[in-house]
Image (cartoon, rainbow, N blue to C red; front, side, top):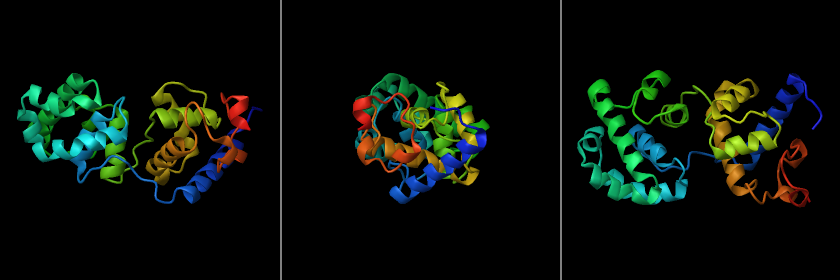
Amino acid sequence: MPRESNQVRLGRAKKIIDELQNTYPDAHCELNHANPLELLIATILSAQCTDKRVNLVTPQLFEQYPSADSYAEAPAADLERTIKTTGFFRNKAKNIKSACQALVEKHGGQVPQSMEELRELGGVGRKTANVVLGNAFNLNYGIVVDTHVARLSKRLGLTAEEAPEKIEQALIPLVPRGKWTLFSHLVIWHGRRRCSARKPDCAHCEIKGLCPRIGVSTTARS
């Protein structure tokens, strides 16, 4: 695509956000949860796993383990058995137990509300922290970059960066801070419903006039 000035890219990003808001007025986090702890656990489970699969597992999980103490004290084998279908279950069980032990020891069993404190928990990186802060506490510390956000940010020509944290830093100046959490939901919903990895539906795309379709095949463009 032709080289854009920062100002032109900023204006295009604003139009993309506006159009996606019109298209997906109900966009929200699709991990089912009733409190910050449940969201933290569900987000850990969502690594390399679909939200749909996580949502099939968490009803039983949340009933079995209603508090950080219960996860911290749970036998690893029992926890692994319950979350097995989410994949990488041994590592996820280890991370959940480690995070919840830290919650009990350092935070009275409550999920903290800062990036620094969340990232000190076992198995919690910036993406997970952003999910929890934005959706459980309405705090815009950053932009969640999952596979959909990474893919669409490149297709839309918003950044050429590959690493999630670099993608996030490239997006932050383009998105108003008050919409950082919403932006991720909008892009994720569009990625799931219209702009898939292998067969994007460019013909019916609501933002096709704003998209340079970087990396998209000629067939998909028609």
